[in-house]
Length: 286
Image 1 (cartoon, rainbow, N blue to C red):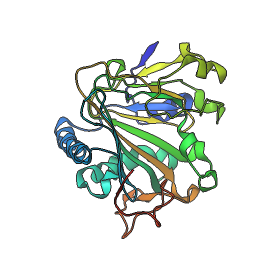
Image 2 (image 1 turned 90 degrees about the vertical axis):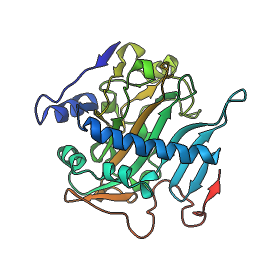
Image 3 (image 1 turned 90 degrees about the horizontal axis):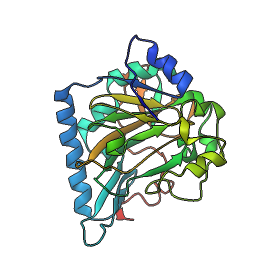
């Protein structure tokens, strides 16, 4: 199994990599000083989520908090749309550098479907089963030309590699569109199973590990088959995910860029994935 060790050799290399393999890596997007500021903001979000002690929702804002095992404290696994209230993280999702990277792939008028933080505590059940992100783009009628209009991005805040439970990709799997992967179990908290790949005509021997240093940015297709394993390091791994879609091809999401320029949040939250946003958008525990 090989590790992904790409570099940004030229302005167009990551575009060719993305189109061929279904993923690409842009090295050193952010400086150490920027990462320090962003990391502090992420830790602040983690503290807020942990203080709730269980999963909490307020409109699109959502903290996924799992009960601790054997008397251990709760585990914060994920937060969604914390950028409504966290200006540093909001600045990352609308950073002009992000728009510049995305422009050759999906243009300059972009909405955002995913604004998400992931934490993997050492040894915790933070695995992600093999899946395609297209599985979660619902309802299907709201998303058009998904393979050519949508890009998922992941910013490494900490080292991202097999030891820290990093992502694993199957290169070229995006070319097959929607595959018959088992969807009977939850993705988050479920282990990757080779049998799931084999049933879909894929092989675990073709997987590669995503290897990122802090400040590196990964991009991947909604049809790319991927998953991740257990964090076997001694530190919590932080990963900041933002998913963008060409505005004309999507009826949902928050605006991120118009003609490559950042767009601020509107006076009320936009409909993204939480179907009860208008009817049950008040703060509540889940």
